[in-house]
Length: 305
Image (cartoon, rainbow, N blue to C red; front, side):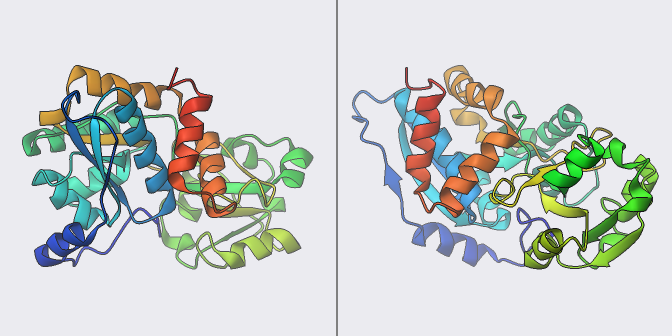
């Protein structure tokens, strides 16, 4: 199950309570000289806090007063909050957000531009807008160890087609029936594996199976913080089997001035999945604070110059 998805049973009262209970922080920008006030929220997992901090700090540097509502909750909390104007901006994911705002109509695809265009069709009547998507994705992906990659010279999923019958695939028990997993690999890529091992979905059993050689290909999330530590390499989804869950800012139209959009689009223009993996690792594995990691990233990429 994708970590960006949440339960859909939350009630409006829970939404209001979560927003009221969330700790808020604001910038040191002098309100008298501020270009405006923007409230930035994030989902309740570390990657979202990092991205929200990157957006917030970039906007602060440009002269905006920013209030933070990090780890606000699931999309069932954040969606109503932005529609009601209680928050102005959050780091979204193109395909997952599209399927949230269209109530699961199945419009998302592996084409990021088409997915964002459809997302904006859904967002516009709500007074919302999805800005330019980044190249960074947090989506279902298939990985191999570096040893397997080097042995077979693998870079993309298409490379598995000729050798699939020598390899074992590992994933959650639902994989054999899910179109994004084993059936999709067979239909889209023509990959037929030697065997399938029912494990967990991107969890410790999958990692253990990689380590002991029980599997050679496993289902992970593309921005997992421990991929580098475990010497795992995500293979490029070159035929777009997975829906395009590229990181994309979702913003209220009332605060989406050209200047604000330029600040955020500049971030999206350079953010990559590899950088996301590194940022997640600094927070989740090295236990650094999201705000410090975000600041270092912005300094390194000359956003504060």
